[in-house]
Amino acid sequence: MAPLKMEEEMKQKLEDRRISPSADAWQRLNDRLDKNERPKPGAYFWWIGLAAACIVLLMLLKTVPESNHNNTIPVIVDTGEEQAEPTLTVGNDPQPSAGEVEDEVKNRIQVKQEALVESINRSEENKAGKRLLKKDSPASGLAQSMKPREEESDDFVEKNKAIINDYENLPETTIADNTNTDANSQEISNAELDDLLEQARKRLNLEEPLKNQEVRVRAQALLDDVEEDLDRSFRERVFKTLVSGFESVKTVVAERNN
Amino acid sequence: MKVIPLYKNEDQLIKKASRNNREAQRQLYEMFAPRMLSVCRYYIRDVHQAEEVMLNGFLKVFTHIRSFRNEGSFEGWIRRIMVREAISFARRQKKIEFSTDQVENYQQQTVDAVDMEVDEIQLLIDELPEGYKLVFVMYAIEGYKHHEIAETLNISVGTSKSQLFKARRMLQEKIKRINKVRHGTT
Image (tube, rainbow over all chains, first blue to last red; front, side, top):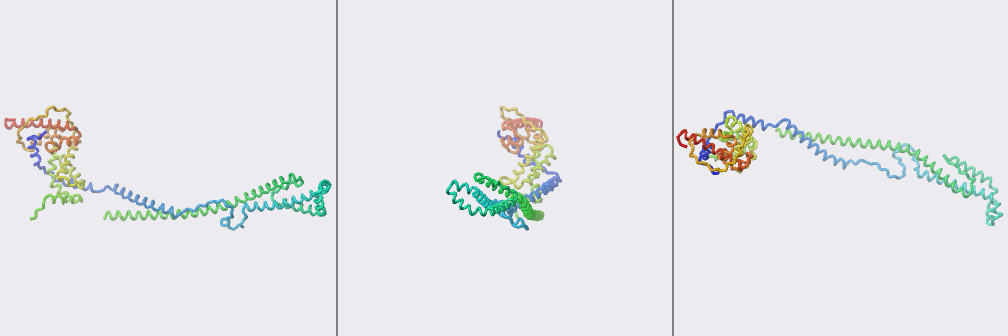
């Protein structure tokens, strides 16, 4: 629609019109402008608090990874090696390990067993020596060899008695029935050996808890000390960062106000 | 006497006002307030309410003065803000209704020039229904296009054209009556 002449004239007259505002209009506008410029105290403090929180968070993020790198917590790892731990059992004589004790027991048993078997065999041979002489010619050699030992039979018995006594002196050892024939002697000796070994293990197991207790207590105490030191140092760092963050925020606010 | 071009003075004032210089803001207010109050008066019948709307407009001008990019005249930028404020006020005050009656024939009857004072013209405009008045003022006085009016008032272009036609018809009838009374002719 094309503008009409009437409208053109109306427009021209209205455009030329000026209406003076009231005298206090500027003052009212001035007050509104002042109100607009003044920041709200709540919002101001909120922004300051947010800025401070961001600074502290950034500093914490920066220091925590560094503390993790530098302060490696020592971990006590049980390597499974059977070795003595003299550093943890101060005041006690160093005791042999379970393996060594077991080996020693085995050796003693073996030696004793061999001696016992030998003595038994000799006594048996002495008894059977006469029969063998009649049946087998090779036994003659044996009979001949046994002959001079017959003279020493009393000594052999006495020695056997000593050996038996030694066995009896061993803690919780069981003496096998040595009167069995050769066919059962091997089994008995093995059983006896197993018993002795078992007893030795039990003995060692009884002793170990004592050792472990001492170790646990000492290790735990060490760990507690280390953790205390770590916490202290971490705490100190956190406090330092908080203080420095607060100081920097304070400076920023003071500069802004100036 | 040194003549300082007005536009340079205005630019300097605008720069100072953007830095919240109150004196510069006062000078800009005094430069443009009378014209802007007249603009607000196109839309608002009560001059005191029009003044209040004008002050709200200037508050927005000085708050957002940094967003003025020198792409057009500063006065044109202020004027657009004033028009938006006036329309918002009119919407809050009255429920503006736009007649959806479509006019088939938009042929206008020519009317002779009106020998009327500006106050009489303003009174004629004030008597128009709110919807007619807004569209007529924006199109005929402010120079907005129909699609701009439709976008601002959230109406269709057809409704904008319809409203303008009806406003013109109403004004023409009133002017004819006035001319008949004064001069004995239409």
